[in-house]
Length: 171
Ligand SMILES: [Zn+2]
Image (cartoon, rainbow, N blue to C red; front, side, top):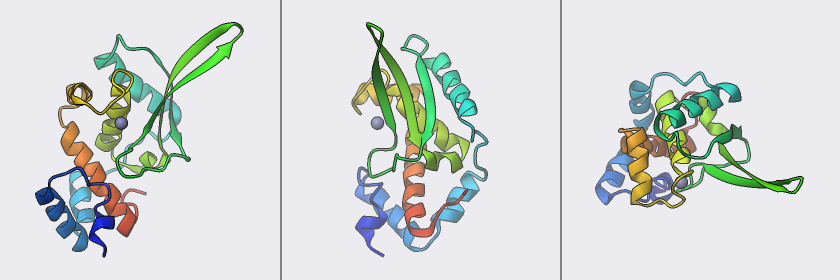
C-alpha cells in the first residue's frame, strides 16, 4: 500500500496524526473504528430533506446571510484532496435584472454518510457564504456552528482514505 496515496485526504495534518492514521489504514482498522463511532447513515436522502436540514442550520447561526436557494447532491462533484464540496454563486439575468443565487452543491457521496459528517460538510459550505477563503474567520464560523467541526473533518477525511482503499462503509 502506497502511504502517500493512502493519506491523500490528510495532507494538511501533523506528521504524528498522519502516522497514526496510516497505521490504522494499513491494518484495516479504520472501518471498525468509524462504524463504532458512527453506526448509522443519515436519512436525508431526498433533496427536500437536505434543504430543510441545511436551512435549519443557517437559520440558527447565519440568519443575516443571503438566503440559499438550493442544496443539492451533485453526481458530478468528486471529492478530491482538500476540496470537500462546492459552493456556487450563480448569477442569472432575468429580464433586465441580474439575480444572484446561492446554491450549495455537495458530492452525491454524502448521501451515504452518518449525520454528523453530513452536518460538517454543510457547515463548511454554509460558512463559505460569508467567507470565501479557508482563513481564520472561516474556521471560527465553522466551529461556532459545529463545536466538533475539526474532529468531524478529520473523521470525514479518514473515511475518504478508507473508502478509496476498502470501499464504502454505509453504502
Ligand atoms: Zn471550502
